[in-house]
Length: 427
Image (tube, rainbow, N blue to C red; front, side, top):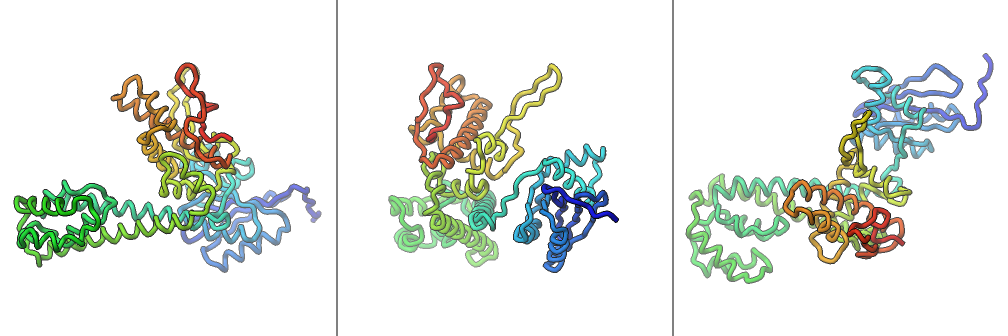
């Protein structure tokens, strides 16, 4: 058989369909029409077998895959450490390409590996940034764990407000101010029933509850108000040693534990990112606090890799998409084909920014809703525009290395800010 000669730009292309226990691999070698199939188990031995097989070709190797949960992380780290070029395939693009190639909605792992390889051949892939390699693994884990703890805390807090308080102490709801405080849960844990409060006199209750609620403004007046409210409570007269009260205290202890975990993550994130230059730049933007800055760095990584802010908007799913066919042209809406956590962070940051005085986010929001301030649809569109502006500002601040400067751009004669000047921190 004649020896196949390879050109200087010849590469081995590999499509991998990821799953929990096994991965389907399809290998295309230059000069060969027959493709090699492999099944790689999620074990170190099979990882080494795949790496050895790819190294035997003696050519550069490009690997394409679709991210599936976190099942791809270990395999891609091993392949990246072996020196292979890793490319990420969009799940939406993979589904559309599979339907177009096979004219069917059928789906199986070997077929997906074939479609991934085809997308790799035509260049319809993205660059994969391994968090452990680029140094964002710790930031990502802090951000995701914080979100998990915060959601658990919110669910448990709603359970307390809608189930336990209506049963045992309905009037205590008016003393609740913020879910971030621990004193209210601590007070309920010590006195879960108003009958436990009225069993002692006012002075004894104030003395017992004084260290429980911590440093509060007008603490004596607050405790006196709680005592008087307990005397007229309509809560169920449940015995203090009953299982119902034990379960209530168990839930309250869980809530306090979640508050402590959340605070510990916030303190660790502040300590970890205190000297991070991008974190310091993000904190200068209105609406970007420690948690939002942590989420932006965790989900976006190094924003300098986006050459233009439109690329960052597309990454967030904040880019505009329009359905057009013939003479029909639909309304332009944000695509939402992007990072959902990052898009939610931008939305929350924009809502916080418009509440702060003397910044261009609030100014643009006010100009947007000036026509009808009470129109909910107009306000929603305004918040969306502010979220897109927040993304542009974040990109400009990080890329230029300059902190945010409010009202850097001048307003146009018509009262609207031109798109090309809608970034406060342009260098």
